[in-house]
Length: 216
Image 1 (cartoon, helix red, strand yellow):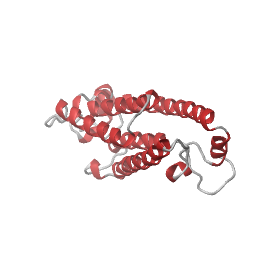
Image 2 (image 1 turned 90 degrees about the horizontal axis):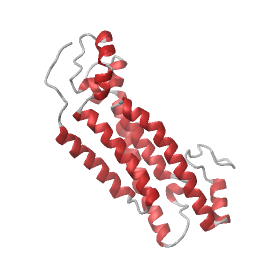
Image 3 (image 1 turned 90 degrees about the vertical axis):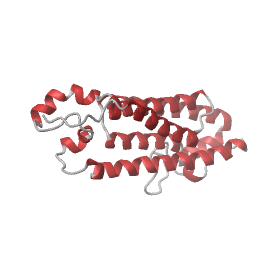
């Protein structure tokens, strides 16, 4: 196993990158109640866990070091490129930052932040008018902001998978699903039949590719 200059122990980068992404998401999401803060807090925990392993301490590489060293004896486990595990496991050559999965991760993350921003604008003006948000992205799905968070998290997993974040991802999916149901029950109490009609024609998370009569 070769050893170059270590790419870890860079705790200032952990703090800076975590702060950038968390504040960026905060500026779009703008949590306003306890449910919003739970949603945002779970996302923030995922981001911190990700960057701790990306620049601080590579726990996943450490735990898999025996297996990786056996399968890839010439691999420098402490290099930054090795942390892009999908590229390593798929045997891709060259800079992993330009791999197809890495490029796809940028698309998921960028599109997720776009959805987060666009959805918040619709929701903000609907709440000011004490109306149900049913326009823009809310015309396609009932919970675009949760969809946005999932796309961003999935993008991070494509870019830099770790054992901890891969374990957190299904937990967050379940959590966002439960929060969505709670939110729907509150909207149904507030808007009654108006919300029922909206829910009947609008999918919860996955937009219709073709027009149908029932939500997915």
